[in-house]
Length: 265
Image 1 (cartoon, rainbow, N blue to C red):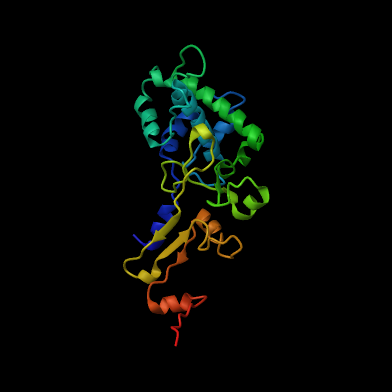
Image 2 (image 1 turned 45 degrees about the horizontal axis):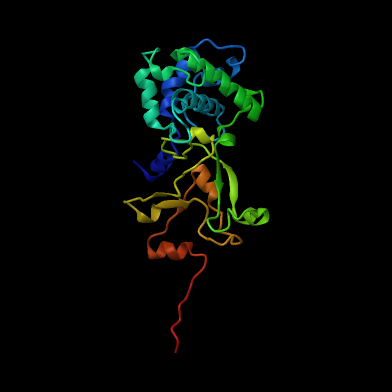
């Protein structure tokens, strides 16, 4: 294991449910409406990069399934599904029981089987993404759905447009997702917007502390007009990290400014 390999692992956006479910969705009969979208899932590696069209479609299908199978079974104002790996496990556990209660589409009357609910979710997801991103599935993008809004904790919700524009950042198109190593959480009930993220990534090289790296979510300054207010944001989004100098020689080498404290005479 190397430090570089660990940085790559931190950005792993593999969706384990996608690896399980996407091949099964491809095997279902597709309608004229859904066929071009379903074709995106053929050979998909289950990675959720920001520019991934298959990830956009799969997560749209998953959001539909969460609503129809789980959220609609209860009062969504009181309780709702996170859509995370516990629910992924439910899908795997009941897959071979197509008449299981949880497969029923609880948004409509009657009782639906597994395949009926899956096909309804696939159709609804196709319509949703067509409305949001156009009728060319290959141009769909997970990041365009899965955006991060960064709000300043003091003035970011002031309700004053120009003030919020100065202090807030976003929307930022992100990859990753819920229950992945590249953890950018979202809640199906609320759409695809990112609602939690790692605020910092860091790799410590125990063989050479000077080879360690890190990146902050936004920047090192809390002042909106400072150059370091948001200068790490793009690096954080793409998985780039910066040298984290440890030894005195390296600290002095990378120093941009020096603060000198002079005691009074």
